[in-house]
Structure formats: structure tokens, C-alpha cells
Length: 115
Length: 113
Image (cartoon, chains in turn red, cyan):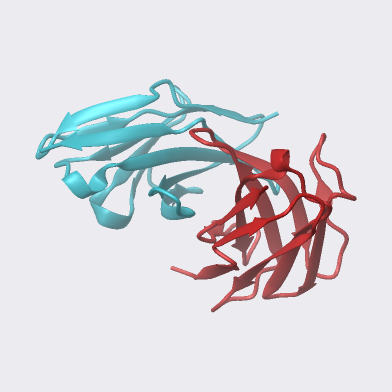
């Protein structure tokens, strides 16, 4: 199957700093990318959907000014957690889809810990 | 609105026995159905999908799932479980025309040696 990478795989930062997470589709062009958040022992919560060259569509309750998403190319999307606080600590997972009927391929996730 | 239910939080199966992980869904149109598996501290791996066609779908690692429209179910099955199948399994659904996947709450499958 197609490969999606995420970087970094884990990050620890101080409260108040910003953290950028990259999501790349390595062997296909991703017209749509998705960002999820997963709390321990829970399902995935969709944060936002982004199409290349367009502004991201955020789910209800997700602060767009706090979670900045950029989908600048067909192979790269970034999530920036601005002014991170301990409650932002979580497992962030991206996914990418090449075609409308295609399945989503998921990245390995990024574990964010805010001290 | 679309939704998916995985009624069992935990399923335990003896190695070598058949396994079933249950999933039911609700959509307003035609469903696109998916199964994913997650290992600890990892992202989700795609197992199989149903879009159209044969109701029995075969996927990775010997898994299969049967689409049952009348029961709105898409149960995941494997004839003979391996210890390495132990993981967290997610069922997901998309309604036709909807970009977003809705995930179930996950079922933790434990294969007992």
C-alpha cells in the first residue's frame, strides 16, 4: 500500500511554544489530507480536512487559530500547534487520500507532550 | 449523518480459532466501509474496504469482511487467529459524497496462545 510519513514521531516542548508536525505522502499524490487526534484508549477524532491549495476545513470545536494547517503541495501537509499547553498533549495522526473513492493511508503518528 | 458502532471493546480468542470483530453502520446513502488495525504507538494500517461488488471482501493478513446490507453490518473475520493479530481494530464508514471517515470506538483483539 501507499506510504505516509510523519515527522517528528515524538516531541516534547515547553508550554507556550509552537510545534510543527509534517505529513508526507511518499509514493502518491494526496489530493486530500486529514488530521486526527487520538486520546489514550480512544478512537480517532477528526480535527480538519485539507485539500491542496485550499484552506483547511475544521471540525466543530477545533480552534483554527491554534491548530494551523497548511497543505502547500500534493505530498505535504503541516500541522502547527501554536502556543501549546499541557492539554494539547496527545497523539496526532495524519492521513492522505489520493482519489475520492480511495482509502485513506495513515501516518505513524506523532506523540506530543507539552510540559 | 453517518455513524459506526463496534459493540465489543475487547475480544479474546484462542490461537488457531476463528475470530470475528463486529461492526454495524448507519448512513443515508451507499456506504463505503473500511477496516484498519492499530499497533501500540503506531498509526492505522489499512486492512480492507468495501465500495461495491462482492459482499465478501478479502484483505491483508488473511482477514476478510462481509458486507450485509439488510443488517447494516461489516464484520471482520479470520479463519485461524495468530498471536500477532493482537491489536486494536477500527471499523470506519463514509457516506457516498462525504469526504470524512467516521470511526468506531475500536475493538481490542487479544489472541491467547
